[in-house]
Length: 173
Image 1 (cartoon, rainbow, N blue to C red):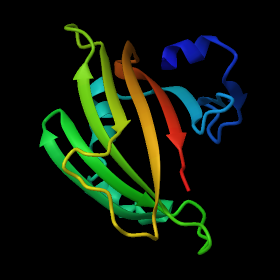
Image 2 (spheres, rainbow, N blue to C red):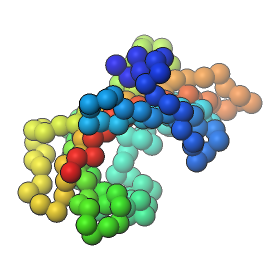
Image 3 (cartoon, rainbow, N blue to C red):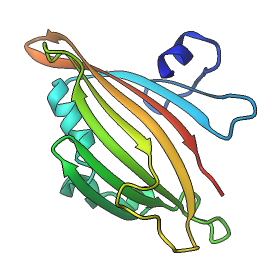
């Protein structure tokens, strides 16, 4: 579904804070979701890119979590290829707008035997053993996303990876 949106005129180019990142956004009329896409190339291997994204609970990322308005994060590992993530963000800093609570199930896999492509998919979930909060000060938000890593030719002996990210988000509330 995400791939079909890339070729149509649903998504419009938007300004990126990084000149090396191409970004698009849009929505489907009558649907509560917004859709975003970004793409860039990085100087790292597919494995390095994927492990950095999958480890949302690393010391490095948790050290800056609150600087990005993060309030709570609970990661439950299901296997080496699957984890459940409950995260709460204060998106506005306003006491009048409730923070958003996200529950997602994240699964990663190689797309082929040659290990040239790798995908991390996160889907909104309700009942996977991580019950929603009863805390009324949070509003439930949903997100479905796909992060794709494609191996590129090395440049100057260094690995390169094309990173594509799709997200479909409903901020709820």
